[in-house]
Amino acid sequence: MGNALKAIGLALALSTTLVAAAMAQPTEVRIGVALEPPILDPTAGAAEAIDIVVYQNIFEGLTRIDENGAVQPDLAKSWTISDDNLTYTFQLQDGVTFHDGTSFDAEDVKFTFDRILSPNSTNAHKEFYEPISSVTVIDPLTVEFKLSKPVGMFLFDLGRGDAVIVAPESADNNATDPIGTGPFSFVQWDKGSRVVLEAYGPYWGEPIHLTKATYVFISDTATMTNALLAGDIDGTNNFAAEALGVFEGNPAFNILVGTTEGETLLSTNNKKAPFTDLRVRQAMAHAIDRKAIIDGATYGYGVPIGSHFAPHNPYYVDLTNTYPFDLDAARKLLAEAGFPDGFSATLKLPPLAYARLSGQIIASDFAKIGIKLELINVEWAQWLDDVYTKKDFDLTIISHVEPFDIGNYANPDYYFGYDNPVFQAVIEKLNGTTDDAQRKELAIEAQTILAKDAVNGYLFELPQTGVWNSKLTGMWKNSPIEGLVLRDIRWTE
Image 1 (cartoon, rainbow, N blue to C red):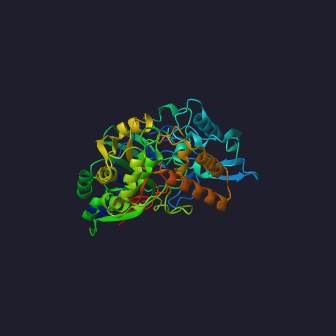
Image 2: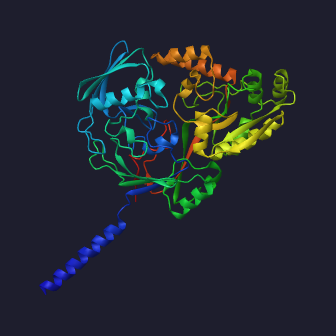
């Protein structure tokens, strides 16, 4: 009798265990993303696709940017700032290790910024950190930065992907084997297919909910749609707006519509004729029908812009009427510039739906004023090489997703090729100003200069339209900085 009861008890216990296992929430997530990163080191490349995978997941900075765009402590748990805004002293988190087991301390901070500022640095935004005159290790958990001038965005800039902390033992291999201090460690990269991350057991920060995350590279909208519907992926942070209707009203999915920092531009090679002529750029600006582009390329989700600034930013000024849609005005300006019959140019388009749809609409309108555009579809790696690096292009369409990146126009070597000493002076003053009212005034002045100079064709602010399994929570609705942060994502009942 006793043995029979024991057997029954064991059977019930086993049954309960099996049921519990069957009902247990999953702890892995598979995320579809449109672009594969060229490398996995955010301190050595400009592509947003890098940060989508690694920012705040594998790598961390002294500060981090939260979903609302605010600066939060990260590897630095606190800091003090001198009265003249030139000295920042950071107290570091204790007990932090890199994913290879090596310890994190102030020496790693110094190494990171010495590396960023070295003559052979490949950091895409070294200019953010050039005001740093010295980084001094006070003790293993205290580091002091001295600046050559006040930098109003310094704490924010420390929270960018460009400034994540790396270690001397592993920095040289981070492009393909990234090692950071974040909640996830790198497992594998199957080129052309996926990147796999897993939870880092000894992580120093708040516990995370996921044990594994896989980024699956899917550039085609139809393929992404099918992968979502089939359950091959659990979500995507920025789905093509034209296909959102497939998921509307489907209880298996949630659609998250938010904002980004993505100023979508008809980027123009300002160093190449005929775009060196202001009248030509003004003519193109008059030939841009923003409403048609927004309706056609974002299905109404985009917000029109008239300069390089996000509409949700408190410093934004509406300049969309600087050059209103007016084909007659455009033709007149082209004639004055010596092109009464227009001219021919190329428009290189990366593999993004908004870019290729916008390109078709712009080409149609430009043809009405005599500008004949040859649309050239290129893959992402080719776009980075041809357009961004070699500046071998006439026109292109791309979203610039870095926050507060209007300062790029102050760099004559940036791929736009815009060289305006007046604008550069305004940005220099803005960068050195910490008073908010003065910063806003200068930001508006900078926006206005770009709008009047028609440096680029300012189209719309890129929306973030995520599609996620309805049992997932913790995804960011908005995207105030490049990245797809995993730390709060979890499965629910």
